[in-house]
Image (cartoon, rainbow, N blue to C red; front, side):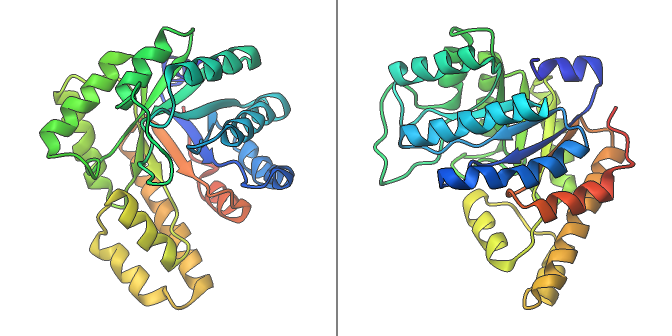
Length: 288
């Protein structure tokens, strides 16, 4: 099923993100996390994709097949393009068709000095329009509530996002954020820019201090004063920070649902304990 149908039928989605383990033998251990996630009956689970080699593709596809066949949950496969040419993307599209995988999150991908860039795709919108020609895929795009780190300003951010939607993105999944007001403002800007597809907020529970520093460096998300106080008070106490991070993420989700957003996309970090705690905190909330 194409995930765009979820919003036509239910009006709201619940979804999770996981990543393929780096070692093939660890793929079996993902079942603990998937078992927990499946209890809440998500509409889809997205599987990340690393740049720079066929093994990344293989593990992504293997995990997506597992989600679809063993858990009967629709997978959304991440696909980056900066380090791939058209022929390589063609092969990937062929594999997706053969496995019956219809949903793709099309991304440019992060620049990596150790992985050479190729010239066929410079932007995610290039990949989106190309994939739309390759089959009956539902294409999702990424969005940044506080602007992509490489954006000149918010106006150019909206223009680039509109280009993605015009190219064929049917759903937008957001980068993490910690201030819901930033997300509400972003959605308002999207509607003003005539971006009328579902915009799904991405929530990441922060469970250790090193993680928050890494995330801020990567995506530039701002930290509300309330969140800064939590980090400052509990960063030296691992279990206390875990509890506080889970509680903060759960409160974000409750507020988002109360404001009638299009869904929730939770970054699980393949941690079954995180998945369990979040699921327990929101299991009685309605997602339809």
